[in-house]
Image (cartoon, rainbow, N blue to C red; front, side, top):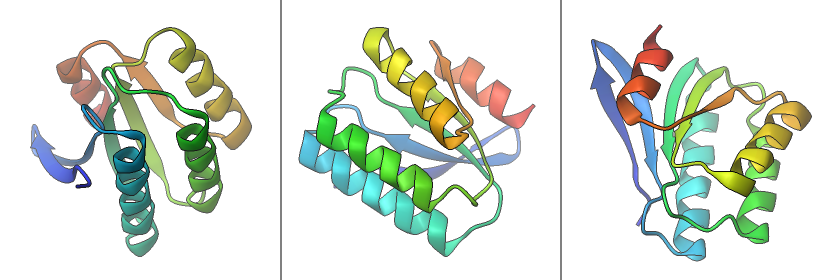
Amino acid sequence: MPEIKKITHKGKQIIYVDYRGQSEDEMLETASSLRDYLLSDPGEHLRLVNITETPATRKFTAFIREMGKETKNVPVKGAVVGITGAKKVLLSGYNRLLGGAMRPFDDEEIAKDYLIS
């Protein structure tokens, strides 16, 4: 089941996308739901993504790349927690290739503060 919800941090709404504990198929379903949400409401968004202990599979990475192309006109300030090692390299490449604005953080509270700043 997709884990996308709106949370409030210091009076501002953030889209929280939680991939923790999801299989590749569940991650794809969650990402698809996020894409649909962003395309249905193309205003500016604050987005926090938690990918702690999730696999960075080729299929998921390819899907996210394509999703980035589809949603590139949706203004987003984003933060990612749970990103380490090779995932940081993938995120850096994603940001460069697609003009993404996803910044890695080690802590959710710090990420939330960044998003609302």
